[in-house]
Image 1 (spheres, rainbow, N blue to C red):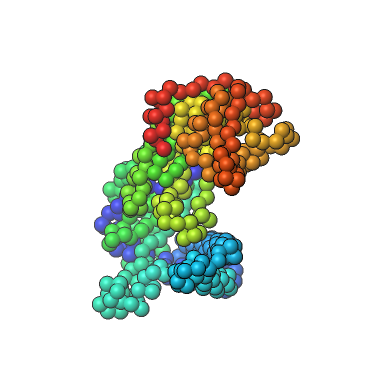
Image 2 (tube, rainbow, N blue to C red; image 1 turned 90 degrees about the horizontal axis):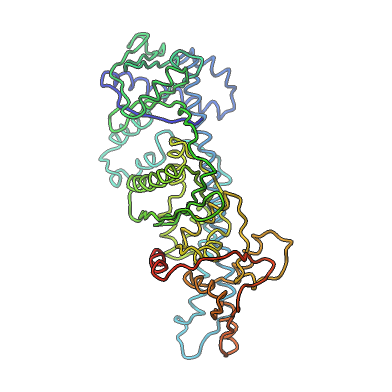
Length: 531
């Protein structure tokens, strides 16, 4: 069971109380953070802070839960920063090695100015990359030597005081108002299952009334309890009422945004019975920048349905990106619900690739920058869970190559739908043997895993254009096909390229000799236009 959070506006009559609670809890949180960094015992701090700051034990636990999450998040960010810098250093070192090999092969051509020669340009690139490498190595050493720390109020706002005019401030006093407001903009009240209405310090009823326990430090101003009314969640009210009836825990976070206080209620999401069945097949999804390809395989591994969804994320804001991905996710989950099948999606991590974007060129960098895979998967998993559709994570190794070489011409698919079809079959545990027309390129060895042969085939077909894979399937019908390595060898020898032709089905032991259907030319042109 996972947690879900709903939000609504806080009524105006609770604003004064929320402001006072934000100031008190922020003060306790900062002092607790310093004490924990000094290594003081939590039990001793809990006993002392109840007396010093006038709070009860559950309120202290709420503050500790908040600061504990911030400390853990900061540690993870620190480790991620180290990993990103290390990947950037590694990428620069690899680029320098490549440029060094190119420099050894490049000679100063006669009749060319020194500053315009390829050799001089390579030396300049190497010089600039060495400077950048030294800077990154120094930064990496500094990050490793430092300890992760927290700035309450955000690091960006803290730095704004040193350049007031550039950040829209006329005086330091004006900045100080925003700084104090940012540090006191929220407080949390953690609930538990064994407490009344799921939370001892904050209790919400089904009719929209809320009852908040006031800390002793503020009782002289607000009394023992603060009562509120007209609390209505426009989205999720039924789930909150269900949690109240079943005795689940509810955690409340009060947050101020743009001078308006909001109430965030977190509870366990009700379990939805699984609607998908493996007997109905599996939907495979291949996510690419600008395009999502999907295909459904039946229980026997045959193509059942296919399609594409266009998603253009370039130059969109974060909210626009979220809305675009949300529409695509809704379409995918609705299709899976219609067929009653699980969803298979590849596990991808582009964080390492994004660290070396500068070494990959402008077009590739733009593609990775717009690629929001983590947000897509988060939204897909959330919506599928609410709908009762199972989501399966798969290793995407060689899925694109298998789709290009085995299924694209067989079913007349585009490259992305073919990759999605491979993922669907992989979820069904269907093996992918090398097609007969491609198995002739590999040694007759049955001892290794099939992926090792696809790896060898990937090296053989490196540089082959996507639409040329349709020609490869024609080799079974006696059509002459030229491979990239044969083109290279023919260009070096100065002769004609070596042609590869087979008079029929290949009897290679690794070959998949199942019957194939060739799509008509009209359908082929339609699918080719998709990629």
